Length: 87
Image 1: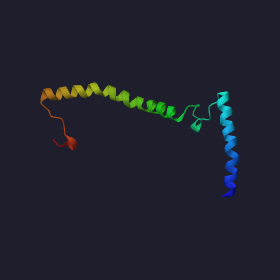
Image 2: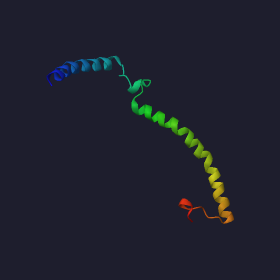
Image 3: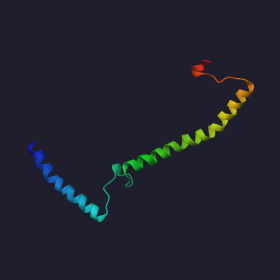
């Protein structure tokens, strides 16, 4: 374990100096997976919003049809089908 400890003890001050230099110059560290310099939480939020856009749009357009069907069923006296087709 002597060699890894020596390597780490020489690497740590170098990393600390680089981080201080980057902070002073206003340079942000490389982002996760080089995703346009965005932090990972920012990327996940944007990815989630993009992937949920289509299902949310479809659900919004489906809502009025469901409401119309429910009112028609009520007028005709048809009960909604229960879970697994059991009434």
